[in-house]
Amino acid sequence: MRLPRLRFTIRSAMTLVACAGISVWLLVTAERVRREPNAATVCHLGRYRDNGEPFAYGHGSSPQVFWSRFWRRVLGRPWPGSFVCPCKSEFERTFAKGRKVDYLATSNDMNEMHDLMGPLMIEFQSSKKRRKTGRIN
Ligand SMILES: [Zn+2]
Image 1: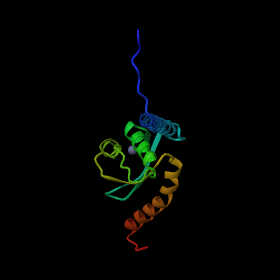
Image 2: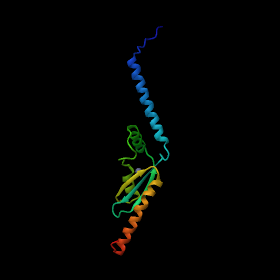
Image 3: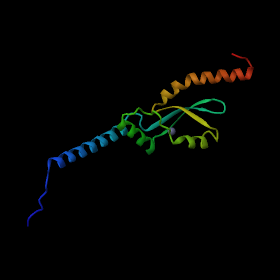
Image 4: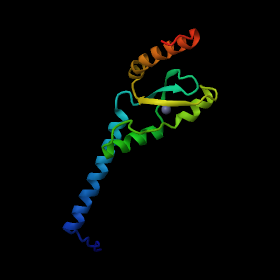
């Protein structure tokens, strides 16, 4: 029995090596994104639209977050950049009880969100006090 002869050209070898390289690169990138420290959580700094009260909110990572991070890493874009988390509408419906919110920052580190929230909370408290007392400053 004679085996079929495979034609193996330089062009097909180059194509094969390029495809293998791209595949390995994508797999390594996916694994690096998965293993990043704090990759299991997503944290947001937000503000209620009605009174401006700031809040920090965190949740577990989801497939949308992973793929967004993956493609940003592949394309060399910063994380979170212009990423809009799909949790916003759920947050407004459940935790905020229908109040509208704006996300100001997103990170994987809740400590970073709390550090950013400090000055916002001081400003919110002083404006709340001003509204109560009627003083200008
Ligand atoms: Zn989210």
